[in-house]
Length: 145
Image (tube, rainbow, N blue to C red):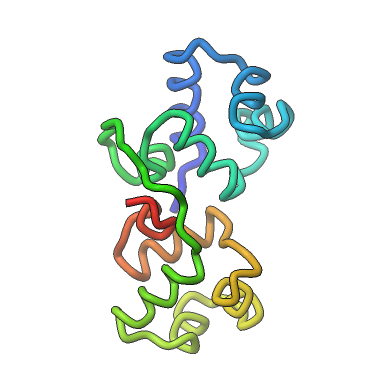
């Protein structure tokens, strides 16, 4: 799963490379300074929305920022695609049912319903579980590659 220390280390490296402090980064990606501070102090994982904003701002893959790959290559990411459409496609391609997904990942049926109906996006933690389950990247799950 995600090693929050690696995520924070990489985020700090980008902030240093771009000469940003917490306030300027927060303003640049449209969140509060407290959100950035909490992430840097390892108080909590970023939300999926914050993760997307960070990868867009720094032009890096979510997989690199989350520590899933050690290759920091700059990427041109597509606009985020609707997660529910990507999840439906992955289920079909992998011949998995919603039931399989719920049982194998121990995810509630209401949460899977919200994902498939477009009412909610998965948390970063759930994205990590899904990448392992479908053997794909976080950027793929977000429809960005």
